[in-house]
Length: 136
Ligand code: UDP
Ligand code: MG
Image (cartoon, rainbow, N blue to C red; front, side, top):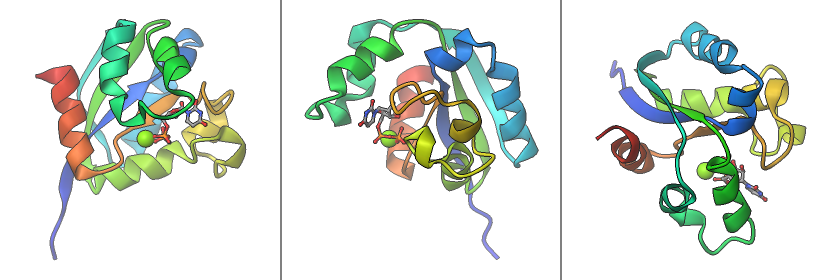
């Protein structure tokens, strides 16, 4: 039996940091077989947000998204565990909190499709890149 230990990048976005939800969200990860290998609270510039989210540069929401991610402190974390990438995405729930499954982070805490409380890497390749972006 192969055990796929992965690392993924998680971000607690400004809306959740502002509402003091960091510990509650971290608890959800810890209760669901994810270890927090590293964590830091930072406030990034709009240019850094634009670089981080550049896969979305052609989207209509790109500019607002970059303004938003740089609007206040965020907490960036390396999460590690078995199938960490998919596990984290499931714990987050759908992009739009309105569509998110019960008990997911976005269902519990998300305000709107843009203020949806968390980011999580969506693939092995992006997880590597995103961890590198914030921690190397
Ligand atoms: N987003 C938005 N409007 C949209 C779609 C996405 O503001 O119509 C924001 C939202 O904050 C989302 C981020 O852009 O988390 C990245 O979008 P993606 O489709 O990658 O969603 P995610 O992977 O975060 O679920
Ligand atoms: Mg995404």
